[in-house]
Amino acid sequence: VSTQSTWGATAITRSNNSHQTMADKVASPMVVDEVKKDVAKTTARKSLRKPRVSSRPLRRGKSSRPALVREIVREICGWAPYEKRVLELLKNDADKRALRFAKARLGCMRRAKLKREEMARYMRDQQAAAKRAKAEQEEKEKEKEKDKKDDKKDEKKDEKKEEPKGPMDVISALKEVLKRSIAHDGLLKGIRECVKCLEHGDAKLCVLASNCSEANYVKLVEALCAEHKTHLIKVHDLKELGEWVGLCKYDAEGKARKVVKCSCCIVKSYGEVSDELAFILNSFGQTAPTPAAAVADTKKQQIPLLSNKLV
Image (tube, rainbow, N blue to C red; front, top):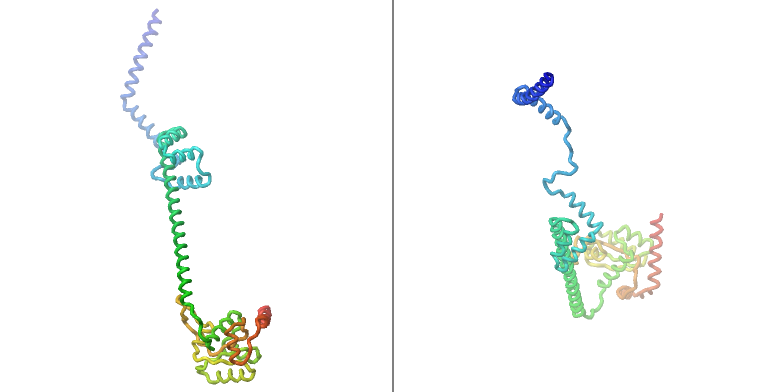
């Protein structure tokens, strides 16, 4: 009996001592120091750890990358079926029904409102783009009609201005002959080219400026023309001859600028038979060639040029 009683007493004393020791431990300064040391160790371990990189970026501001990705996906894949249905409802002015439909598909009223706003914004942009395209098309049609009216007015003015041409003179005829010769690559310029063509006897018409400063130049050309019986026409001004043979530039108004003087030019090929050519040849007492002869002449002039290029 004594043993049992002593055992029960010891158990009671142990339980009492345990309560006392816990209270004492909590209040004792040694335990507080140990707890502080443990906290310091854990904080040191945490500071040594590598910082975790979050899979999603912090939403401090709106990023342009997701918007760009969504835009690309939208251009490639187009709208989803439920989005097309929301667009149809918005076109029919059923905003509440579109909101309920979007909420049923997305599961949240906030997302449904955002989706409805997005669809409405897209629809407004499409309508504005259609209006702009229609306005541009109307402007183009108005410009076309205006251009047609202007063309008709110009045609009427040209018809009124057209008057019967007066008698042809040598200068006007010579200008047309030189233009056609340039178009068919049958005109030579400069003393070297002209003398070479005159010596070979290929020249058909020679044009010489009478106000050339070199007297020997004029004598040489006249002598060669007389020797080979080449038609010679003299003009008054060097600059006029340079403009006729194309040694100048034309501005927006069609006036000749930066004209280079030309003392002599040779017509090697007439190119085409015209009234101007017939007038000039008649002034020399010669008949104009037939069109077939003129075409054959131009072919003869082109063959040696091609052979020289190939060599």
